[in-house]
Figure 1 (cartoon, rainbow, N blue to C red):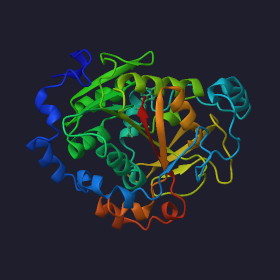
Figure 2: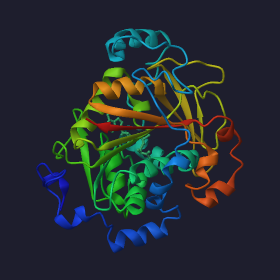
Figure 3: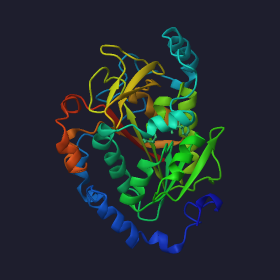
Length: 346
Ligand SMILES: C[S@@+](CC[C@H](N)C(=O)[O-])C[C@H]1O[C@@H](n2cnc3c(N)ncnc32)[C@H](O)[C@@H]1O
């Protein structure tokens, strides 16, 4: 049943069998084909694997890699967005076409050609593990900013969830729909709202590499607020983002900003991403230090924000073994560039 047509589909609109929590045979077979550790087994090894997780206070004070150049404010950070914008304008942040990253057909096709090896090592498997701890087969998982749908497809196969992809880009959704995919539905985000999806319809949301394309704190807060609308109370939101403090290092598939440069919240920076053909793609992004997420998430109606910089060591038991063996991951070992943030809807 398409969840887009179900009112209040979170706890109430699902078929009774779905709540039993047993992924169907099809989903189990797909997971077996996935090449990853069965993430359901990982639930029972939480303590060992969550060694680097750390709960953060309202201003992210306890982060190992917190915001590098702004001390925690005593009032909501989004109240500062005008100042941030002005400061950022001085740094030339509006220098491009003004179009959002990856917009239009060319943008969608460019993103679809990106390799994302570092993300498949230190990012997506950790997002899936965080979700596997909280959801069961048949639960509704929204991929917020799903792009061409490859990650949503993998999540559906590994987690056995009913995955719904949403995105602001019709071109991205067209690419996603054209794939043979395990994703159940795709919806357009218009005026900040995922069309056709009822309040509380989702048992979980993942949002991977979306925040970096948002120009100011109001926009970040807007996305968190819409994600909160989609979630039923108590359900998890898992965010994946690059850490703008990891500037200039040559990671396997990305480089964030310029060597030695320090970026404040909202500053524009160039991210270079390796394509599958070995060439590199540049995109203008915005620096959102992970230390600002907790307060914004709490402002949007989340609690229990936990952040983690996944390491290569931790990836040994989660990532595709062939991917692990394929490179030495020197930069990733020295300073892991990705941050996974988990929060629960109030
Ligand atoms: C870098 S791509 C990431 C795609 C996918 N999540 C992944 O990890 O492969 C960012 C995506 O977020 C979408 N996006 C940007 N702003 C958005 C917003 N406010 N709401 C929903 N999607 C958004 C873009 O259209 C794009 O498809």
